[in-house]
Amino acid sequence: MNIASPDGLWSPSWRAQIPEQLAQEWDIVIVGGGITGAGILLEAARRGLKVLLIEQRDFAWGTSSRSSKLVHGGLRYLKEGKFQLTRESVQERQNLMQEAAGLVDQQSFAFADYRGRKPGRWMFALGLAIYDFMAGLRGARHYYPADEFLQLAPHIQREGLNGGMCYVDAKTDDARMVLRVLQEAISMGAVAINYLAARSLLRVDGRADGNVNGLELVDAISGASHCVRAKLIISATGAWADGLRQQQGAPAKIRPLRGSHLVLPNWRLPVAQAISLMHPKDGRPVFCYPWEGVTLVGTTDVDHGENLQIESKITADEVSYLMAALDFQFPQLQLDLDDIIATYAGVRPVIASGKSDPSKEGRDHAVWLEQGLLTVTGGKLTTFRLIALDALKYAAALLPDWHADLTITPLFKPGQSLAHDARLSSQQSLRLQGHYGVHAKAVLAAAQNGELENIAGSACMWLELRWAARHEAVVHLEDLLLRRTRLGILLKQGGTEILPRIRAICQPELGWSDARWDTEQAAYLALWHSHYSLPPREQIKDWR
Image (cartoon, rainbow, N blue to C red; front, side, top):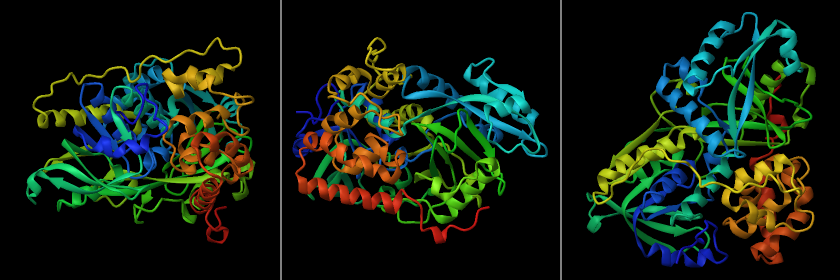
């Protein structure tokens, strides 16, 4: 029996079936429930492999819910001469916008051109020309004189403004992308289990020098221990990749870098275009862009020296850094700390090269095979499908009875159109189609009275809460509010004001007692205040 139903939805009693699932022998077991692991799960399952994914926390708990949300080629890679990485990225960006419309959406970017500031109009225009050519785009960029550019970005610094360039990239809900990829894989027979950690590697015949052929696991919810066997173990744990590798005596290769973001109300930092600027302190790019009804500001790029098992959070210095960028670019708005709704921080899996400046480290992915353990790490959200296929090329050599075509195929099965449903706006229809694919009509059918409305201050609809609680492997309240929906970073105080209505909708679906709900709510609010709000004000140095 599969933990999930054939349509890719987790069944109500799915955790009770975990021992039965783990007793099977698998072709591949993937450790890591972020976008890289989810991508490998999908590409392996659609090619006939019996494949299991385990995640020590929640799906997308790590980097894949804390990214900049951008699906982009990365103009910085052109500057570094990484033309192949840029070409692959922009082409995948175009593919994802077509195959996941409503989940991956085009975003216009505006880059202001100021006298005496790098990179300058002509150098930037040349880079964009190459960028668009690689994507097969024509006429997607345009330079505007100062007066016209200010109509597109009216609140930016005017002194020294020559004009500005507009170009296109894309954005997504990163955690939602992970969930949809997982569900697509599950509908093809794969299994995905959250809150199940890999404690140690198992080897052929128990020999210390034998190849890895299994894992000792521990269930974070029940505390039960399990063993699972597979022909191949793939570690797709991102910034945590050195953990399993070092059990084999392999040297550390990951340089964890933290990227942090501020979340502000769209009315307080109104940007229709994404505004790209170079930070006045160090020249690093900082972006301000509309997302899910708010404005995101980021990102930083600093060494993360904290324990990776502890959730990352923004520091006072990073708040100062990002606020200084806002004050520099939007002086008319007089933004202050009181304008910040929430913060979040993620740790990037960057391959260490010894460079002193974290921003100079490459973002390429890497695949390492060490005593039967295949580690896949690094890379970008945009190219997760290409990373997955690359990993399977290595896997093919270790699965001699398996032969498959590893060329790119459409990411998802065709979704369900809601375009003619009079109850929904066009934006709501596209959102449900993009976020839920083949389940879109079922999501809509599950809605009860008043649940077709958007939750104030966000693009999320009430019905999304009910569906997630019923079908999307929610174990803790934080799963529901920080990853299945993003209300925890979209609403003030993590959505405290609407928690009573969330409880009325979700508690019956989850089957939680009053005591369980109270415990989960207290834990969620404590987490929000410690990791998603501002650090103590007295620690945030003057940034003006």
